[in-house]
Image (cartoon, rainbow, N blue to C red; front, side, top):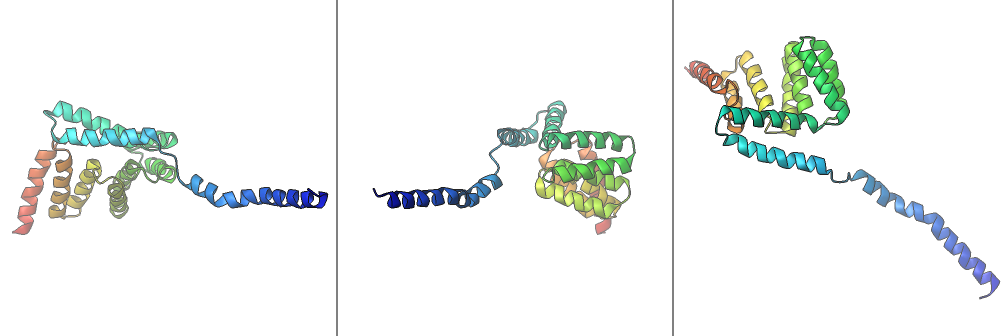
Length: 203
């Protein structure tokens, strides 16, 4: 091959190699935007599905409460490790009635893990404790959008609706919670009370 032709071929090959990263950029960007399947998350989802099925058929309160505890643990663990620490600290602050500090913890948790239904639910509880019912209701709506089976969020929503004087809405939320968790602590007594109030409102 003449020297000039070889130089031309070499130049064309070099140009093609230099252009290769530019051609690959869209492919790499798409690959980076698609998270790899997380086996731990898939395992947690499968376990949650199984637990919810078992919860409806639990033979007694002890078994149901054990399943409930595991479900709540999995809800927390769906978030990142840093978020889990914030949620646990926020729960301690909530229990200690340091509601402003709890709210800060839950704010930070939601920034880190906005897909965590439990983070939204716990912040709703902090808002409710601070008397901001509207903010609490918005957070509960988001929690239930992310996890429609969140019986804890439904129970909290029922309490907010009752406080707002809407016994019928509170009853509907409580019925939805008990459909998911028939042995929810205090659920039957609360259901009877809400039915009594709703019937009184209807007369």
